[in-house]
Length: 165
Length: 268
Image (cartoon, rainbow over all chains, first blue to last red; front, side):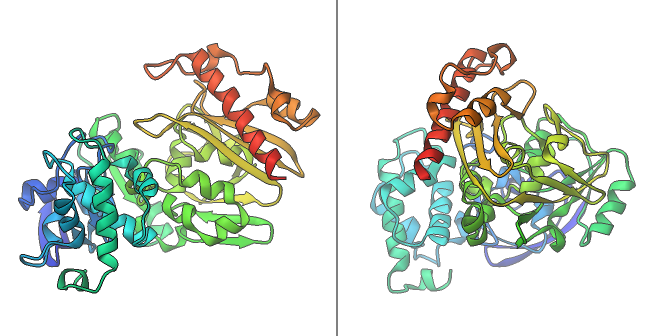
């Protein structure tokens, strides 16, 4: 076992973990943050994407102990109270989901795209950037639209949710 | 996973000490291959020595006519580095084709070359560019470093610290990725420069990354896609699995090589 201290969704967390614990296991099994999903468990599907120090990573391919001292943001940490994060709001507005299983990872991937590429994303770019996120329901049409809209909204006049990012 | 002890040294010296303490200790770089391997219980290191806390293993610099990239530099950094884009754009493009964005946010150059997956992209660039793999003990030309399928010249406890890429000449990489895993089913890196023409192939061969001598000779006689007509590696030596037969991969290599040469010829 090893003592681990990190920040999750803005709150300090200290926990003793087995060294083998994956970041996604810490989040889901220990902390009950079950919005981060395990789809393939082989680094392909992106359902377990979380932000680690602001960057999207596959939480099934990161050891919890590697996040020592880091800041982790999960899907549960994006909204500000009742105000959805602009990327979340865009997925609702554009019906960017059907069953919702892949959605947390899609939203995290979308936020990571904005961080790296800015708020003006064309559809072709979004489709290419989604190569690490799989949806088994709908195809990607509305997901792509949602990420484009969410990206634009993140550029807009700062509502509270954006300012707190 | 089997149990292991975890270490996060802050210096190379501490890392060396941690690795020397056990014959079964392994360095951990970005973990994008090693962690899935541990999950499948295909490896059972006694200790994992995380190199992520060692600043000396990071950094991208140009020293005279060499591009030097630290072992713990991540794929996303190589793909977006203005220095790499200016001096060796083919390498930046290659890094941008590895895995997917979340994998590129973690995976590292040093981890990729040390693992020498037969379908990894970086080994092709290292071999075609005649790069030097720098470790904490010595410097090895890529041709001596990569010794076979998942095999390198690394000794137990030896740590890759950087890779030095010679600059000059022109280079490009053509890759046919597996649509699910994004690993190369055939990736061909072609470099044309003072040292002649070098063609390195990844993803296809049972022996891992290799230089395709026949293609190099044909291109030396005339640098055009047509020079490669009729050439392909031996199908019997290519990987045959559920994703494709040996003959299929041999054909892919030939096509990727012609595309790479066409792109270089057009860019001149």
